[in-house]
Image (cartoon, rainbow, N blue to C red; front, side, top):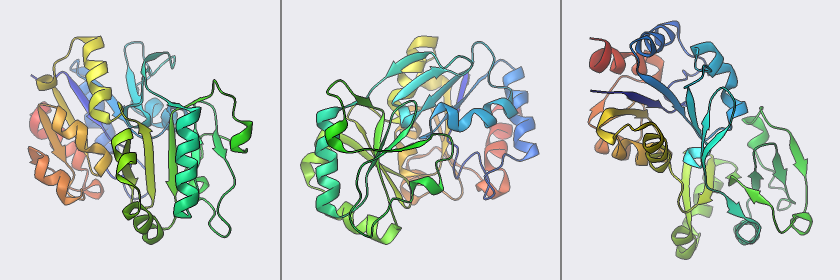
Length: 269
């Protein structure tokens, strides 16, 4: 029996207008009323999903969120941390050197803000176009204190430039970090122990919920780990082919209320 439903946001829960349809709202609230835990599982920070948590009634005591692609597992009401995996200052320096070599902009993020070290000339970051929840702060890598920890680093630039850069990333970076796309123009670099599947594992251990009692829904490469981890992995109709191949079920697209359709099919019916 499914006890927990973990749902990606962009391209999954949210439609093309970055909204949750009334049908999907109704279905999620109905599932929660049946005692099923509804968990938003996203690359965004908690502040970046607050409006959606409030809309869905997911800020009660006993509600949880998985943010930063699994790097942070939190109580949705208080923000208190259950599990956290971070990047050290030395790791950030290494990633920044890589960004300079690849000629792409880098940002890094903690719980409170987005940091903007100098970008390559003529290659500004696009991250401010999609990140509205946290303030942006100019900095230099020399000013980062030794004790500093970041939740993730990102390269956010035109997709064609990003894809060319990804092809040039040395193998040892993939061995040292979790590197994944969460949008076509956004590459995320995280602690090696971070992915949405590991975030679910940490929350499941905390709650006493087994993988086979979980349902997950997603559309992009950063959702692959949680699709594989859960007993019932569902790919959106608009998902990448790799995700569809790994999923137990392919639902309708995010424009067609695919989340609601899958939950109605497997839970409410």
